Image (cartoon, one colour):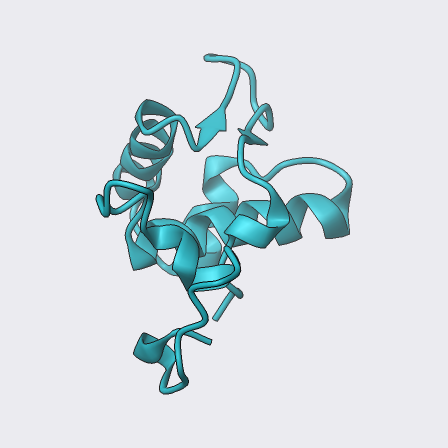
Length: 103
């Protein structure tokens, strides 16, 4: 795990939190965004379809507008793609190795 988790950061591999940083040292995604990305990954794996925004609301205990804003932010950062107006169309654009563990 990275130093934020209390361990020593292993910068030789691009796993978990090390993927927060890109080559130019600009954050790829925030810790909170990483949790939403991990949720998308695990929800899709367990349920066979991506989550709806209402699933984010329930899991993260956020308001519907907050969940929607997060989806828009992740899409704008090119971390996910979706078909506007189509429910459960979120698709991760990251490999599993680039995602943090879900807290």
